[in-house]
Image (cartoon, rainbow, N blue to C red; front, side, top):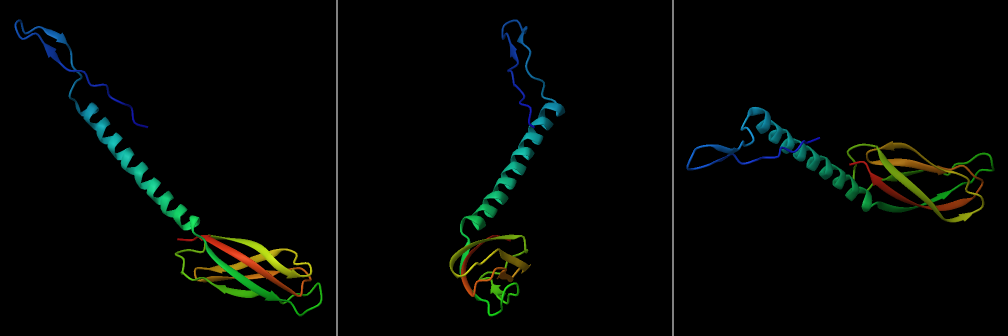
Length: 141
């Protein structure tokens, strides 16, 4: 963390040449302290810009409604769907939030798996014959 240098003027009596106040030395130690403070500020600003860019990606999620059907009897289930992303991500570290908006029966858990930069798979593990799930995809850029 930056340690502030308190700069004091060097004051000399103009008539006698006597030093009234000893000023802060103009030294490598003091000047390098300033340089490190400027560098710390630049690094902090760059880190904040990275965070802002990440938040912008999270603030405006990609929203999709996924319709899934299951024609098998419980405990079997063939509801899996592949979901393509509108924008390819730079990595697969994105978050997928799921919300069941309609269902015919017990949906159970919603499972998101096989995430890639351009899409993922989704399924439910309950006995419902159909379900509509809204997904909100954030991050990954």
